[in-house]
Amino acid sequence: MRVIQLQYEGRHVKTTISVIKCDVGSLVGHHIVPEPLLEIAQNQLAKAKEAKLINSFYVFNAGDDLELLMTHEKGEGNSEIHTLAWNTFQEAAEKAKALKLYGAGQDLLKNAFSGNIRGMGPGVAEMEIDERRSDPIIVFAADKASAGSFNYPLYRIFADPMNSAGLVIDTSMFHGFKFEVLDSKKNERVILKSPEELHELVGLLGSSTRYTVSRIWQAKDHLLCAVTSTTKLSLIAGKYVGKDDPVAIIRAQHGLPAVGEILVPFLHTYFVEGWMRGSHWGPLMPVALKDSKCTVFDGPPRMVALGFQVCDGHIANLKDGKPMVADLFDDPAFELARREATETAAMIRRMGEFQPARLSQEAMEYTTLPQILEKLKDRFKPS
Ligand code: 13P
Ligand code: 13P
Ligand code: MG
Ligand code: MG
Image (cartoon, rainbow, N blue to C red; front, side, top):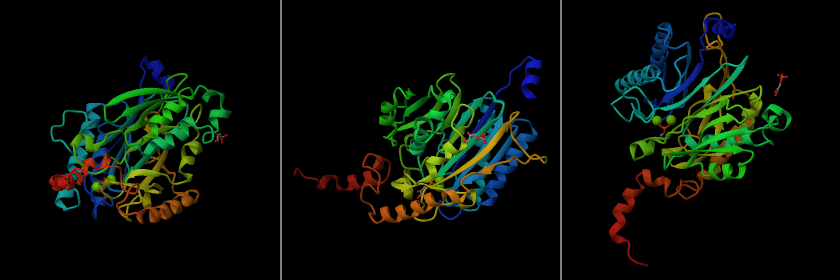
C-alpha cells in the first residue's frame, strides 16, 4: 500500500492530474487531429514517462484539439510539465505546418514561453490530490465550445438535488460545495457556497459567456473535486482566434457525486457558445471518442468523457502498462441527447445569422463585426 509505504518513508506525495490541450492544426478544416500529430504526442509523453517526469499518460483528441492527459507528482503549474506540453505542441504544430494542415499552431498564441503554459493559448486543467482509497476520475473535453460550457452541468452535478441524489441521500454530501467562479472579463474570482448561496450562484453561472466555474471543493473539508480550463483565447489575443474548447476534471464517489450523477446532465442536449467560427449557440452532443469530430456547420459541438481510476500516482493500468480508460459516452443511453442535438441543430440553423442563433453583439466584438461597423461608420446619421 502506497500510503503506508509513504508514511513509512516519512514523506507525503500527492498525485497531480494534468490535462493540457491545444489546437495545433487539423485535418480538413477544423475537423480532427490526424494520426501523425497524435503519434508525436504519444512519443513525447512516452519519453517523459521513461525519464520519470510523468507516471502515466493518455493522448486523445476532442475534434481538432490535441489533449494530453498526464499523471505525475510535481504539482499544479509545474514548469517541467508545462514545458513538456509546450514542446509537444510545438513539435506537433511543426508537423502540421509541414503537412499544410489547417490552422497549424492555431492556439500557440505567444512565442516567449517561460515555464507556465497558462495564458499562452493552450487550455489547462490541473488537480493535485491526496489519493483516496479509491479515486474515480472523469475527464471531459469539448470541441467547438467555450469555457462556460461546463457551467450548466457543474451546477446540476454539485448543486441540484434533483440531479444528484447524493445531495439528499448521502449525509457526507449534506454540507454542499464551494464554487470558485471566474469573471473572465475583469479577471476576478469569487467563491460561492451551495446551497446557502445557490441563487447568487445560478445568477452568475447563468451568464455563462462571462462567468465560468474554475474550481469546486467539498464544503466540509475543502476537498478539491472539480477543475476546468477557463481561459478565453479572444481575451488573450484581442481577436477571434478559435474557441476555447474547454476541458474539466471531476472526482467521483465517496462523499462526492457518483459517476452516474456526473453523467446524467448529458442525458439531454443543452446550448453552448462556439460552433461555426466560434460565433453561434450550438446544441452539445455527447459522443464516444470515435465520433469526436465536428462536421455539420463545424459541429454540432461535441463532448467526450473519459473515466479512469487513479492508483499510486498512475492511471490504473493493464499488465503491459496500458492505461485503462473508459469511454463513457460510448453508450446507447446518450443516443437521445445525440438525436436531440441533431434536431435542435437543424432547428436553430434555420435562423441563420439572426440572434439567438448567432452570439450577442458583445461576443461578436472579437470577430469581424467591428470591421463591418467601421466600413459603415460615416453612413450612420442621427435618426
Ligand atoms: P455501489 O453500491 O455499486 O458501489 O453503487 C453505489 C452508488 O453510489 C451507485 O450510484
Ligand atoms: P476551433 O476553435 O475548434 O479551432 O474551431 C474554429 C472554427 O472557426 C470552427 O468553425
Ligand atoms: Mg481549429
Ligand atoms: Mg477545437
